[in-house]
Image 1 (tube, rainbow, N blue to C red):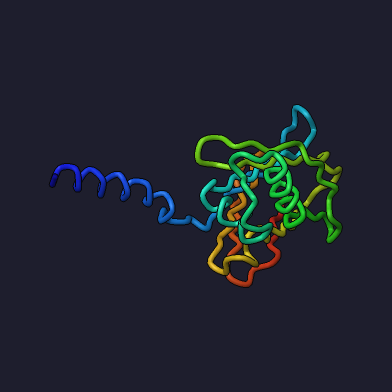
Image 2: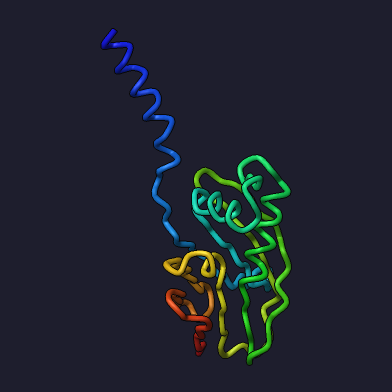
Length: 165
């Protein structure tokens, strides 16, 4: 009887653990200057657990980022609306390339042509920041001037810029 009680307790406990998993409240975006294709490729990586909580808060309890392509598309559109690359204060037209669930991550992909005469780039990344004030969005800019520039969006930070040689 004791073994049965312990087994049931362990089974119930293991079922509850995922619902109490810790949210990371962080995202990593890579902005890659691909000279071969002459495109700026943007790859947003969100923890799937965070995305699950976010879509239910933003789009309603029926939203299911794991099983619903519609929810995945809606979240991808949401991210795209809250991310901007700006040249001389003007937004670059980013095309949506796609999205995917990959293990414990949700990826959103965008791209644009590399502008001629690009000496600086401003970035805005507000995804999930209105939902969670503690959300930190990190943007790594790679492939321009052979160095990596890192921008961190936290607190009230709205717009950050990098200069190129």
